[in-house]
Image 1 (cartoon, helix red, strand yellow):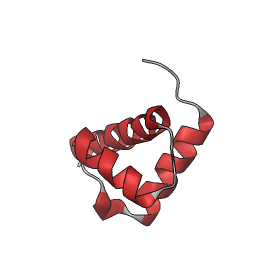
Image 2 (cartoon, rainbow, N blue to C red; image 1 turned 60 degrees about the vertical axis):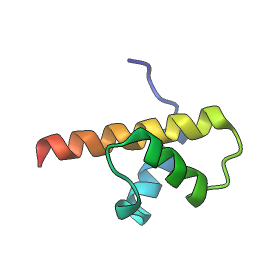
Image 3 (cartoon, rainbow, N blue to C red; image 1 turned 90 degrees about the vertical axis):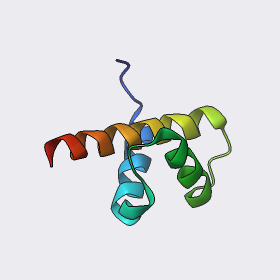
Image 4 (cartoon, rainbow, N blue to C red; image 1 turned 45 degrees about the vertical axis):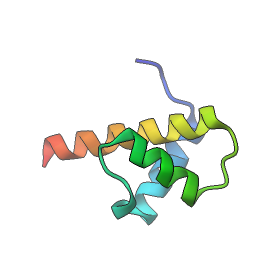
Length: 64
């Protein structure tokens, strides 16, 4: 598993804090949410953020 850049983690965590109900464990849904809630223009960066958020939500669901 690759180490994620700091800005991906920071933005992903900020989105999860501000909009926790906008995300779930589905990557495709999270991609759309990241697009709607941010001004990220790069598809690669958007996908990385969505992947990070998906991973965090999946971990939270397993531990709940």
